[in-house]
Image 1: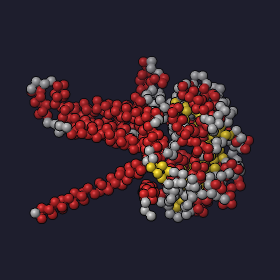
Image 2: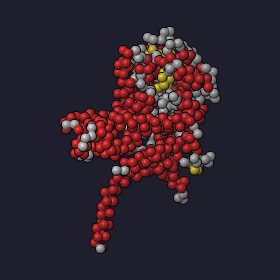
Image 3: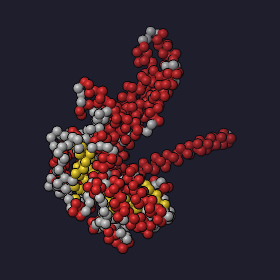
Image 4: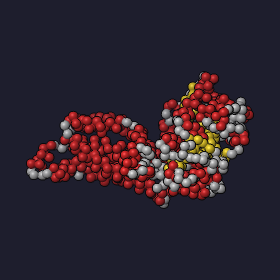
Length: 284
Length: 349
C-alpha cells in the first residue's frame, strides 16, 4: 500500500517538474500582466494621490456610442474573417488530404510560406495591391471602374481580404490535422453504400471534421479580434478596431486606466464567445 | 506597512522594472538617450552623438522611441528612470516637466545658452529643455498639379482636388494636431473653441480627403499620385523632394505652426554633468546648422549662418520667424485627451 502511495506521489512530483517551466512562463508573461491590467482598469487616482475602486472606466465605454461602434466593428470583422477562413480553408484542407503526397507537400508549403514573413511585410504587400494605382485598381480600370471606388484601401472589405490571407494557414493546418485522422475507409464505405460525393462530404467528412473546424475557428477568431497591425494599416484611422483604440488610449490620450478597461472587455468578450464554442467541439 | 495600496504600487514598480530591457540599465560611463530613428537618428549621430562620444569617451546608448513612447516610458520609470537625456518634438516636454520627470537647468550650466533665441531656452528653469531646432507645419503641394501655388489654408478646399487632399490624424500624430490647431487659428478659432478647425476638417472629409496617421503614408500617397496637397511639416517636404517627388512647402499667409524639438535633462539620474554636456553640444551653432542643412529643420541658435537653398527652405532669421504661430503646450497637454475624443468622432465612419 505504502509503496503504491510512494509511486503516486513520485509521479505527481515528476508531472509538477515537467509543468513548472510552462507555469513559470505563464505567470510572468500572462497572469502577472493580465492581473496588472485588471487592477488598473478598476482603480482611480483621487485628489490626494491615493487609489480607490471605480467602475467609471468601464462606464465610459458603455455610455458612449463611439466605443460601442468600435467594439461592434471589431466583433463583426472577426466573425466575417473567421467565416471566410472556414469557407476557403476547409475545402483546401480536404483537397490536401486527398492529394498525392508530393502535391500535398507543395500546397502545404504555399500555405505555410507566408507565415515565415512578418505580418507587417505581408500587410504592406496588400497595401500595394489594394491601394491607389495598385494592382487591383489597374485590373478593373479597363472596365471603367476608376477613382476611389477601385481602391479597397481604407475599407472593411480590404481589412477582411488582408486578414483572411494572414490567418488562413491557422485554419488549414488545424483542419488538415483532424482530417488526416479520419480513415479513408469511412468515405469508401459511404460511397459503397450508394452516397454521392457531396453526400459523403456532408454526412461523413464534415461531422468528423467539426472539432478541427471549431479549434481552427477559435484560433482565427481570437487572433483577428485582437489584431492591430493589419486593420490599422489597411483600414486606417477612420475604421478603428478595439486593439487600435486601446493603443490610441495609451499613446495618444495617455489614459491607461481606460486602455486597461478596454483590454479587459476585449478579453471578456473573447472568453465569452470561446467557452461555449469550445464545448461544441467536445460533443461527439 | 504592508497594505493593499503599497502592494499595488510595489507590484507596478516591479512590473515596470521587469519590462525595461537590460540595454536601458545605464552605468555611469554610459549615457542613455532616445532618438527618432531612420534618417533622423543617422544625422543625430553625426551632429551630436558621435562628437559627444569622442569628446568625453562616454558610450551613448540610443533607444529609438518617438515622443509619446518616450513620455510613456519616463512615466512608467518615474521611481527609477532609465534615460539620461530625452528628446521630444511637439510639446510633450512640457507635460513631462509639469510631472517632475525632467530636471531644471540653470543658464550658467550651458556654455551655448546665450547664443540661443530667447524662446528656445525660455523654459529651462522649469525643466523644459532647450529647443535645439524647430519643425514648421504648413502646406505641402504637388507642383505639377497645383497651379498657382497655395497661399492660404483655405486652398485645401480648392475646387477639384477634394479626393487628393491629405489630412493627418490629430489624435496620434503631433504634427497632425498642430495642423488642426493652425487651421482652427486661421479660421478664427481659439484654444478654448476648436469648432472652426473641426468644421473645416469635416468639409475636407466630405470632399473626399484621405486621413493618414504616419508620415510614410504621406510619401506613399504623393508617390502614387493620390495626394496633391497636405498640411504637414517643412522638413518632410524636403524628405519628399529628396525622394524625387515634385513637392514644395509654403507658409500660408495666416501663418504656420511651429513644433519645438527639445533636448531634456531627465530628473533623478546620477549622470547630470555628462547629460548637461550632451545638451550643451546639442544646441551649439554647428549642430543647429547641421539639422537645417541635412533635414531642413529651422535653427534656434541665432549665430547660425545659412545660405542659398538651405536658407530658403527653412525659417531663418528673426523676421521670418515672426509668421510662426506657437500653441501653448500647457493648454495642449491639458486639453489633448478631450480633443482626441472629439476628433475620433469626427473621423469615424
